[in-house]
Length: 443
Image 1 (tube, one colour):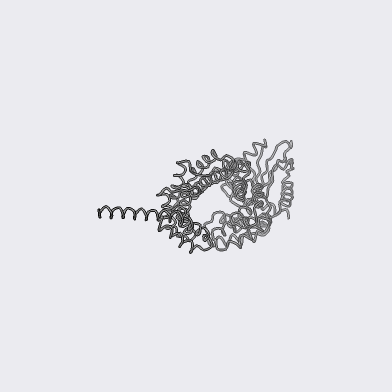
Image 2 (cartoon, one colour; image 1 turned 90 degrees about the vertical axis):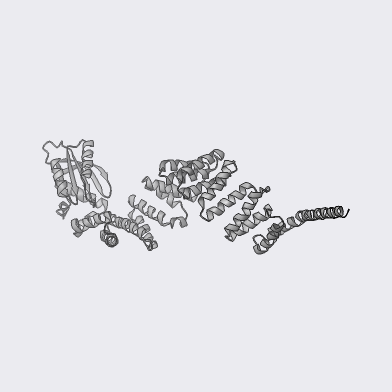
């Protein structure tokens, strides 16, 4: 009888304890959670104390684990944050707001912050496998693959996401980023246009469209995109450099010089950038007629990089072929003045101009007749270049093709200098050559 009494008392005691714990969980835990939520973000230390009191009773309480993970993420204690998120996953105790999707997205965010890209992607792909990955999760996965240079995977994810959310233009933009990074500039531009058509447009859209236009040598378009950017974006050395080069190719040398001089001051600590900027600025000086300033800049670079091919060619030309001030002035002469001087020279050689076929800062091309031709019927294709880099056989062969295209009988080349090899090649092909010393005779 005594044993039965003892056993019955023990059972009743245990039942009372379980009931007390149930009542505690029913009443105490929700109150503590509410208290922690009030403290959260304002008094995180108090929130931690309250939440740990809940965890002591209910180790995998999803609300307590979730709030604890949020606090530890803010404090950059990522290991503890992971522990509490894993507790939720292990117990599979989810609520309407604390879902498996949210828990795994936060784990992916922690892995991203700690640089473990593969684990971050593992969590996101787990959600994708069970069709739980939301649009923001797709965007995170695409960006992680972009940063990890998995461009093909990023494009595939974007295409998959667009099947789910075809109206979300940001997926077109992210696909464009991947195509651009992979060197598929035409496809990248198409993606960007589709994104804009859906109403998605951002600063990064203009930056990417500007870069594509720059690469495709559509410099006027690139300038428009870059100039659409807010001032803080224009302060990027990469954008400034491209903008300066755009203006150079558009023959707006003063704008190019203004941007590149400013960039030169801003990039003093970046020797690689300084070299590129100095070289391009020197070219802009040269085309603006400020040849001596250009030479001074190139000489500075050659002290650090004596094997820089373009600069070696420039300095070789100005030191050996055009050391005289009159020759340097001729190279930097404004185009209108150079055309006038060239046409005087052609008249001196008894040519009469039928058509100015082509002109730019470096090159002039004419179709002419010759007064020395008895019948005045023979057509001459005359190419004048101020090119300072060494002329090649390919350059002459290209002019031979132009002569043929214009049905001219003779080819005449006028340039600062011709090597002995080129003179021999020209002689064999019945090409007339004149160097720039002929201009001096016009004085």
